[in-house]
Image 1 (tube, protein in one colour):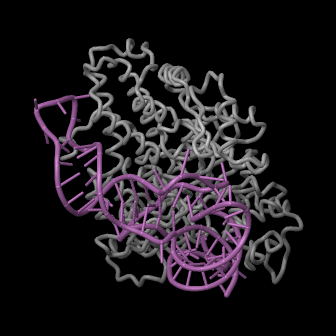
Image 2: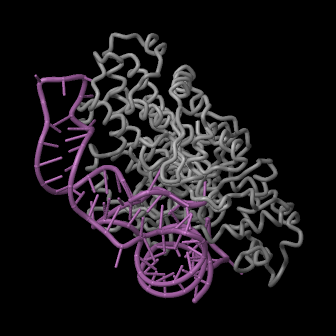
Length: 533
RNA sequence: GCGUCCAUAGCUCAGCUGGAUAGAGCAAUGCCCUUCUAAGGCAUAGGCCAAAGGUUCGAAUCCUUUUGGGCGUACCA
């Protein structure tokens, strides 16, 4: 819709025209301040310029009016245009808001280490990534969702050790001296049981079998992670295991050519020459590659697979890492600009006003699964998707729990359910409703129709700006408009009943489509009884 | 110290490719169910957009500085 208007104006003025939402909807559907910039060039007052422009629009099949107000140009779309578009959308529901972007994108997100279940901080990146994924798919991008599994290195050894410690303390009843760093948490108990069942108790005490234990356990942990993500309706296309990439290390190292060098018995990457603060070690003196090495092989593998664009979603605590990975990409002979790293900022939790620390090693983490159980996938997804991902977010768990009825997700669901109910109450058949014209609606109704038809623009904007919160913002506003309209106008028995129901169906289509892009299923009815349970 | 993200209503946050009177939800106050689910609607109140400069017709938005925070600053992941 906006694209069409924008294209039309670009043609007319021979330049890009800024289109915005009028301050007041009664002014029209779209507005542009173009007269202000033209005024300077033409050396006339903006008001005069706007008047002249407005009167030059006489005949147009898209606009019913073009008016100038205080230097702004306000456009009102024609009834016919809105009618045609709304009717098309209802007959092609699955196509509504879709495009055919085609670009091949690799989206990597979550990628939490398989050393424990996901916590609430991971959930944010997960929701953000999955929402982007859904938006991109809707826009026609050929996008792959990938999880990179860090199953090599110290953290895996630590997992083996942690299971042994837990087992020796709980199964063998030993008095265990805990080292400084190890993992703790309830998830270890079943792992210990499983390990004993599979390997026998001996494995708990045999230090030389830590690795063996860990390699078995990481798969079990990955299963937990995948299951927890599934509960949030998040699914990955591919999993890449760090451990599977190291065979390639020598070749990749060689591929970086001048980008790496030897010094003090270690191998370094010359990342300082590529905007990093300093050069970094990639292979230690004892020959063990560092964490960075894993990411270098991985990114090389990504680029060799040949995508047009790469998006990584990382926790904000990794932001210092961006420049060194980009440096590596550049040494590998690829275009670092194709790699886009998005950050998901920290989530800090309060519980009854008390701050919660979220270090995985500390053990007192809030598990993602715990929150999903408390408030449900829909509410969690909605809250996280509603906040700009690069801003630190703070919320109180206890506040969150009691939020039930005031939760925006219910507000939107209720709007959708209302439409479904009222359509069911009407004596008109759906077929008849779809046949009627959307022309001849009054000001309020037409404005609602226009708002509902804006979804495609929102989807495009939310994805291209990577600001997914634009979608929930829009849905909230649309639901509010629906509720207001519903309150003010009685539908059943109205002389325009079928017409208004058709309008409502367009609104429902937008709500449903928008919710599904957030991984939330639209409800057809709200039940207070269910809520009590 | 350096890098980076941030600072908007009492609280949680939108708004940021510069544009018309800075918005929403929660919390507060007062109304609206003989009417399609009141999980709703209406109204009131609430702001020196952290501070100071600059750019210009025009700044919450762009630039600089300051202040106050988060995160990072490993041969840890």
